[in-house]
Amino acid sequence: MSRLSAVLFDRDGTLVVDVPYNGDPGRVRLLPGAAAAVALARAHGLATGVVSNQSGIGRGLLTTEQVLRVNERADELLGGLDTWVFCPHAPDAGCACRKPRPGLVLAAAGRLGVPPAECLVIGDIAADVLAARAAGARGVLVPDAATAPAEVERFATESAPDPLTAVRAALAEAGIPVRRHASGPPADARPRPAPADAGTRGRPPAPSPDAVSSPDAVFSSVALDVVSSPDAVPSPGPVAHERVRGAVPDAVGSAGRWPA
Image (tube, rainbow, N blue to C red; front, side, top):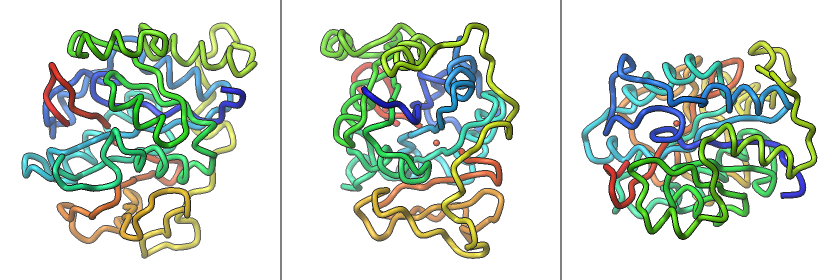
């Protein structure tokens, strides 16, 4: 990776403890080092985001509103990321966004205004790394106890023990001096990408041409309540939600864990 502009994280099993199909913000718990990884990226001027499969919506086990609330709680605990993008579809829906397909990564890169090739994607299963590859980004596997052993072996040379180490290594590889004890600037201290819906209050923003291949991609703004029904499931594109400051989604299924 010659240039690094953004770090995209998986949610469940990477940033927060994996609670299958969690719709309760009170059950959100950060994994060790997760907040530090986000802060380190931000402290060095990188955009940050989350790319997540949330098939519980398509399976009828979760509502979009529940996912939004869980993401908002995670965003609060993590100190605030720039964009959260998630796939609400069931695995058999054939959408373009579900990891390991590239839609979520492309959508997040489009929302952040950076080329996919300048994105690092960090996740705990093979689908995260494969989604990054498919989008032209770089993926790093951060395995946990639920990661399939075959996946750990397959991506042994593209892995890190935790997200913080992954971010440090990517900064070093990109030639960005890593400042010791960097904890990140205040939420609004560094310049952030202009929201994709700037100037479009009251209606959904038009997705970036590089965001997703589908013309039906839907982006919902938390602050502006663009989506009239919280349970509406867009198809076949992903959902992105953002705050006025920045934005706020997660994970994929694999052998040995609940499928997201």
